Length: 164
Image (tube, rainbow, N blue to C red; front, side, top):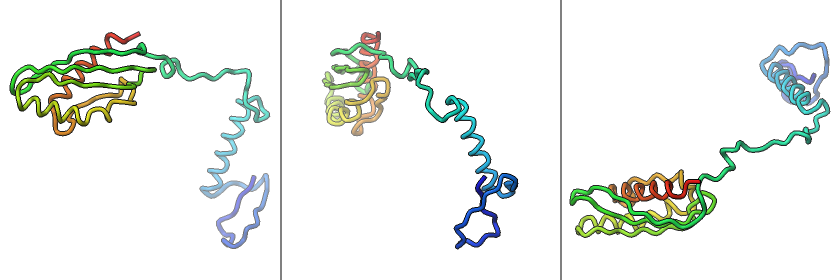
């Protein structure tokens, strides 16, 4: 075991070895714990430190399996604004559960709703494209707080259609 006693000067770089010297300092206990962990790992690897190549290590199935079919999807989403029920259309292209492209069309007729849908349209894309579809959770985008509800409604319908 390698250790340095607490009484040694900091300029002394010599390290002493002894199998009999007890680890009395906190650092000595940490070194002992590390050596024990290394011994346990070595035994788990066949005793010679070599990785077990006969054991195949795979990622958990949930991390590597796709949840949604690749393709292009279009759905309409609904939400309620102060002017009444509003509608948006969302189209996305999925590739390996990631949104490769997205388009948004606001279908409002009320001037206030049209303005909010335009604000949403100007900023949603960077929050969606390149993201896993299950990671998208839009709320307020560019100050538009209700349009995201319609977008998410359409996205939920797309997820239902695309589910494998």
